[in-house]
Length: 189
Image 1 (cartoon, rainbow, N blue to C red):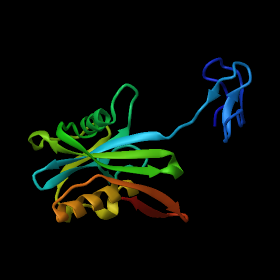
Image 2 (image 1 turned 45 degrees about the vertical axis):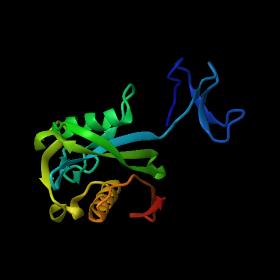
Image 3 (image 1 turned 135 degrees about the vertical axis):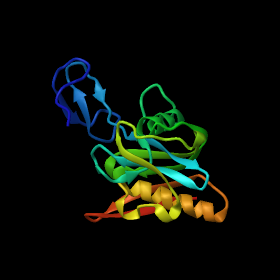
Image 4 (image 1 turned 90 degrees about the vertical axis):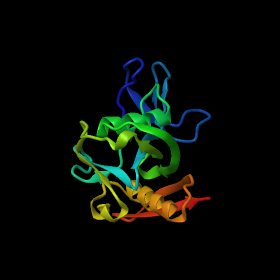
């Protein structure tokens, strides 16, 4: 919820601006329309030999659960640069040969989630500021019941499906909320 204009400091109100089709916060004083747009989350599946790197979260939401290194993209960086930065921040890991792996739209939380695959330089990683622990794991060691987010689970399922098929492709999909705790995943060719 927004109360004041970030441009002039006057009160804002919600209304549908002329030529628009949805409610926006609008300043009646300076006429600034404050658009709210989805956040972009970007991350990576760091690979080393036959293992991938997971991070145990040291922050909320989902403190203590396991995830792939990812976070919100910053202004002034590319999507790919953001994924590399997040991997370094969370796991002190550097990557090479990064390629886009997936794009998920998660409309109920206003996020677009992009995931890359990248080779972990020298197999090295360490605990970053936002992690309690990091570890390289094989498919049999994935803590499926302790994953932090549905989108991480979906990416790992796709990753191992592609690995079994012997070919990695770029995946596109949506994660839709269904019911109180359920999710539905829809994929696009």
